Amino acid sequence: ESTRNKLINLLSKNNDQYISGQMLSDELNISRSAVWKHINELKKDGYEIEGKSNKGYRIIKFPDKMSENTIKWGLKTKWLGKNIKHFDTVTSTQTVAHEEAQNNAINGTVIVADEQTKGRGRITRNWQSTSGKGVWLSMILRPEIPPQEAPKLTLLTAIVLADVLRNYVHVEPQIKWPNDILINGKKTAGILTEMQAEQDRIWYVIVGFGLNVNHTIEELPENINYKATSLRVETDTEWKLNDLIQEILVTFEKTYDYYLEHGFADIKEKWESYGFKMGKEISIKTMKSHWKAPFLGITNDGALITKDMDGNRTTLYSAEIDWFKD
Ligand code: BTX
Image (cartoon, rainbow, N blue to C red; front, top):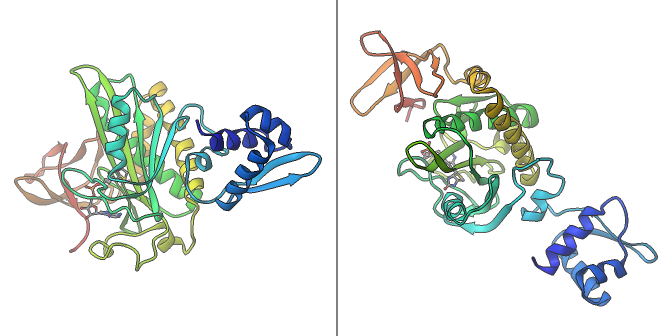
């Protein structure tokens, strides 16, 4: 760990009281003038640090810029995000997360980036991840559940994001089956779940999501701006990414632990309460056909319950809901 990070840790553990220059110098094993230089570097990066001659130093405010330290500062989780890796730019946080998971990263490791140059959607689609404008984040999970239960984690993540949008951002989100979060009918977040598993055992699951936050209308990618939106566009407010991430991680941890302990029933019910076009007619596209039918709900494993072209009740595991007139 770098001297800088050790210094931030010392200062943030003691944020309600001062820590003396001598103490810092002893703990970090560097001279007092080196301590002073490091503190000045932190100030340049936006840390507000108060120094009192006979008392020492304390951190008053972390910078808004995302970093491992600023995300961890005040993060109230028990296990999620205890290990965080932040990057200014990556190809895809999913790709990094797979590498980390294969190198034995612990359950709850979080990979987050300001920018993705090859953000991935499902299948071969892409996810536009403009620098500093949103949350592009992947979590490494090692749940003891059978591999066929893993798709539930996508639905669970969708209600976590919807809950945070409703309770913290104060908008009315909807979830479009299976994994898009809409505000006013436009996509503001997407979720991608990938796993490595054997027949009956999960090695790890990577749950990634992208949330558009601070794009203005002009900053939304032009090719998708008719069907995409951001929190800023919807609320006319700029949001602090660090705070949003903390809200999401805390809510995810609570919901995930609840699921492991109590099962999926309540989560499914909540999902349906957010469901886009629940009970209404939707336009369904599969590999073979395209038809209209009512959206009746989801099954326990997250499949879409609807009617086939002859009007018989059916469940679909993969299909697209046409939701936007191109
Ligand atoms: P999806 O396949 O459901 O959606 C991808 C489609 O959404 C694209 O084809 C495009 O039409 C549209 N789209 C692309 N970028 C955006 C955007 N920023 N806002 C709104 N619509 C967009 C959804 O896939 C899953 C996306 C997961 C993204 C996260 S980010 C962190 C992690 N790392 C990574 O590479 N992917 C995940």
